[in-house]
Length: 331
Image (cartoon, rainbow, N blue to C red; front, top):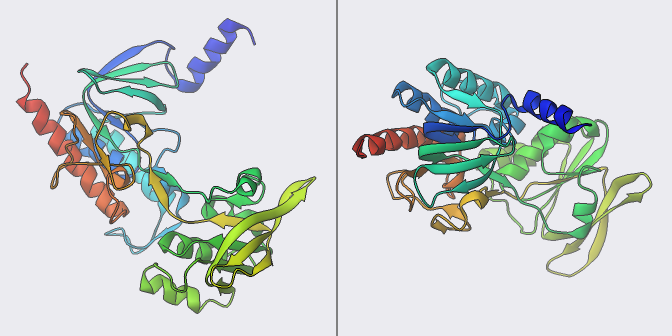
């Protein structure tokens, strides 16, 4: 593709011209419940926020099916909820842009964000709502079969295992929710946990223990994901009993890792104060970070609750904090 044609293609995809610089009073990075709620409140405050969605517009809720704890909805599909939030933010006047911030400079104001589209965004205040990412086991075999039987998203890939057997790794809410979801497709779901009890909520444990398609393998860790070379695909897992050291194989067609998430704080790792495993630290009772004019909300800051409703609440706080902070700055 010729240079001019390539540039035209990029501009078409991103909806902007490469090399543009845009300024906004409030730049919101991230588009989960925290980001969209911040956009709604900031727009209502007439600060004309600009929200950059990131690689996964809508965040983790876009890979969640049944949400039963969102106030006002007995049950709602995660992707539908995020579509509604985005529409609400736009209706309030927030500008929502499909782009991804690859670099962020918080050393001086206005703050500067560089995006994959080539656009540079400058802002008087920044609200970080980049959320969290799935954790992996770190096995070479896991990496080898990613996308070929190994997944961290049951709602994304569960359909491909209709009529097959799968394993789920983990013992918290994420693992139990993924396992229960996979029973809609798989003939058998084996949950492998390194301890002899789960950390998940009791109501979820009850559902899991009483599901006829579920088997739980206690006190085991995964040593290796097993599979074929041609075609590349998962056939099982080699697991070890942590008490006896005994090895065994568990046959499966799909291998789902559900051991939690890590905060997506890479953009600010060397610029903001972090704690509790790289979560962005905020002043208690607020969303103020260690850099004045920079605010953080949602799973990026929350190592305790990590719920959609608490993320949305923090998004509201961040917008109000940013509005008040801007009002205090000299003209």
